[in-house]
Amino acid sequence: MALASRVTTHCRPRCLATSRLVSNYCSKNLIQYQSNQQRQFSHNSSPKTIQTLAATDAHNGSKNSESASKLRYLETLPTSDLISYLFIGLATTNRATLNLVVKLFPYIPMPLIKTFVSKIYCGGDTAGETVVTGKKLAARGINNMMLSFTLEDAEGTKNLDINHVVGETIKSIDSILIPHTESVFANIVANGGIINQAPAAYIALKPSALVANPADVMRNWQNPEFKPQWDNLVGNLSKICQHIYKRNAELAAKYPDRTAPALVAVVDAEKFELQQAVYDLQRTLFKKFNPLDKPACVVGTVQMYLKQSYDIIVNEKKLGQEQGYKVGLKLVRGAYIHSEPDRGVIHDTKSDTDVNYNRGIKYSIEDLFSGKDATIDHLVIASHNRDSMLNATDLLEKYGKASDLKYRITLAQLLGMADDITYDLITNHNVTNIIKYVPWGPPLETKDYLRRRLEENGDAVRNDNGLPLVKGVLSAIFKRLFK
Ligand SMILES: Cc1cc2nc3c(=O)[nH]c(=O)nc-3n(C[C@H](O)[C@H](O)[C@H](O)COP(=O)(O)OP(=O)(O)OC[C@H]3O[C@@H](n4cnc5c(N)ncnc54)[C@H](O)[C@@H]3O)c2cc1C
Image 1 (tube, rainbow, N blue to C red):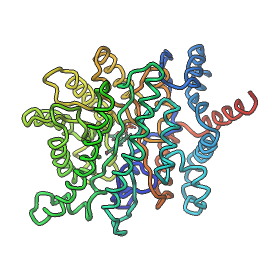
Image 2: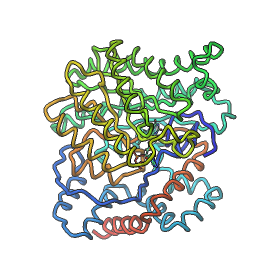
Image 3: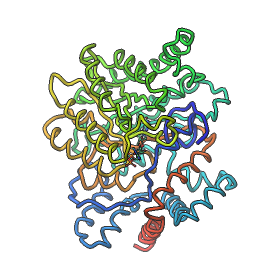
Image 4: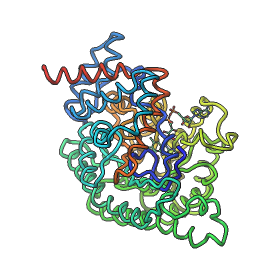
């Protein structure tokens, strides 16, 4: 948690530049199996296995089968992943076991961790491994990814090569995202769907990972002394966005029926003291790469736990409208509540944050569907909260029924987190516009990242425990062996 950062994203196992950011991201846990929604299976593009399971679930009425159905997604996973989930279930059986595992974690040999834990939370060490992760997700009906090339530089001491981060990020667009997205397009069309049903492919950009001395530069972004470094930061993000803009133009020519963008750059939100710089950065990118005559391909982030966040959304719309560009937004609750020195900037209660999050979603969706006055043109709803996801799904149903604009709205969760919710949305709520945030890159400090994941799972362990997960995994393996 004390690690400083320069990486590309939030929950990246491997290369986190800023692990403190990351560590807060996933307060929800993959073993937190909450009550399930009534099943109304009607999905048409998810794999046959998922369809069969969901159809079976529709006949389950009892409480027991309801709780079993929460773990149904396990049956869609490969056996090697089930073994990893078994490890996580055992490690989180109760608070004491979890504490012990967290303590012993530094001494567990890396190959064991790689075999049993990493694959749940990480896309891969290389582009090739990440392509395979994309395919596995697609087989579960999760048709795209938000990629984050991550490099950890605890305390900024490793003198990371920022040009390398920029270069690898650009390469990943061509070597991972575009081939993956084109294969999803082909698959959906071959199965009688429409090309717009494929979610866009996203690249997550963490400003603090894209410049040297990020905290100083971003605190002093208006100070002329820091202008060269600030320009360098803007230049690095612009280089990546320019590549996305260019590739989008090529893909739009190749797939004229697609009205949603194929590729989108997402600027991540940082801790509060750096956010004024990030808002300015986002706007600069909106102006450059989100012209009125094209689908927006740059998305900025708003943290809805901030008291000022609703006004920020309204203001972004106003600025876009006045200055003639489109706005893309990713709405998150916010990852820094535990490290924020000025707690006063954050909503007083969780329920205030929840209400505000839903309000932000409603405002953004209504603007997106508001016809010629619309400024918000792309929306990512990034959360592991079931109610928020269902709320967004209801609004999409209400506003998006007869409009292709709905394909510019995407639901997102972190790889390995809230898998039961992702599964429920796909199988029971007909959601196709859903993706996972996938960290990938060299396994520098994977261990630290994964330990933090386990620690964060502690909250869930208080309410639930890993035993249902262990039982679910064993039952899935048993069925596989003996059916
Ligand atoms: C794809 C993706 C991208 C993300 N990108 C970013 C990013 O760029 N920047 C970033 O900061 N986060 C980011 N996050 C992390 C996101 O902020 C966390 O997922 C979120 O904090 C956890 O909330 P939740 O919506 O999953 O739901 P929940 O688990 O229901 O909510 C937990 C959150 O509620 C808020 N909260 C909790 N207690 C209180 C309280 N007492 N008072 C007020 N608020 C409270 C906090 O934000 C806490 O994290 C991202 C997450 C995903 C899935």
